[in-house]
Length: 110
Image (tube, rainbow, N blue to C red; front, side, top):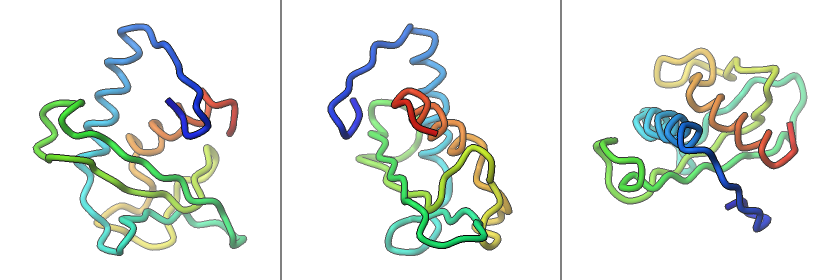
């Protein structure tokens, strides 16, 4: 269910694919600031922040308990480069980029 109250029904194989992405995202290292925020590099400021909350128990086997929370400043399908190397990543991790892309596609946004 989205923040706006929309609910989606997925085919089982799509659900399993999303679970794999969510597990990969839950296993990403924390970035160390208070919001666990990955920052995408844009030539402009004031980009939106996308928040992700994953119930670790629901995806199974992530090695974490409770909710895993992180955010992405400036998510976009066309830019993955981060403002600085973050936990060894120069680009937004592919699993996080794909998961957010799917969520935005489902909600009709880009």
